[in-house]
Length: 327
Image (cartoon, rainbow, N blue to C red; front, side, top):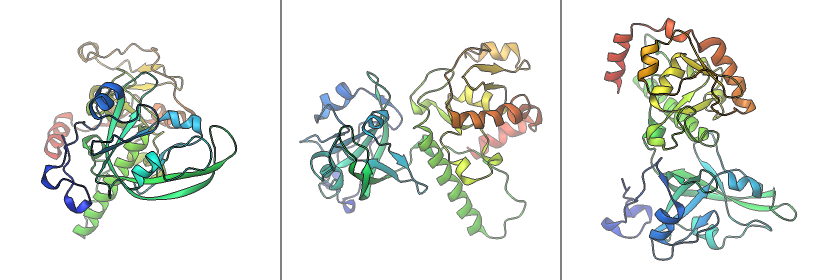
């Protein structure tokens, strides 16, 4: 569903702003769904269609080969490297388009590369807040150079990033309503940051292969309440992408994974439920190797969650009713 950006934001068109024809989290063909429709350069990290009100930016592993990685800071701002493979980057072409997109009345849309020959995942609309030079940045060819890094802020958090659970129990008494409100905002901001960072680590559901974020949940490996620091809570390596049913099994400790990705299923999972869920729950099947940072969190999950959490849960019916009310 398109987002109408007010005229006060500097975009042209007044009430007839072109709606965005992409849904956050969905997958699109760069050739057919983006360039065949809107034009723009078909190669490179930034595309600037001449006769359309969009600038398309692409992020992903392709940038690694050029010596840089786009990443999220603790304030939820994406630090996005500009284009240019060798020599100091300049504010020309795609870099100029991002730098001036608000003044030019262009809406900046970000897509994630899913791999060579694969579709692209739409991550939403962003606004450039500022940019800065980053000296001594690696180049594809030749000596280190000065790169341009843009600070991009999401215009709006989509459902995948705002989806919330009751992360931790509240104290019995909260003396100030403002304190509670502030805490809720901080928790949601941290959860959104975790989900965005997770997308740089995981691309699809470990059990089903689904990549469309509209059908996925971001699940902490080491639960939010068990994390010792805020850094653990927002660490993208402390998570996996799962479809809702797989997420429930993992969150409750019915399943877990070995470091090399082999699935472990508790023997207490009822055979009838296992059959009707429609998931491939064969113990030992490989779901993809985890990286070293994830392995540290998986050790906690295997030790403290697997085969234990579902036994310690409260009344299932009461919890179901409570969750439906919260939702």
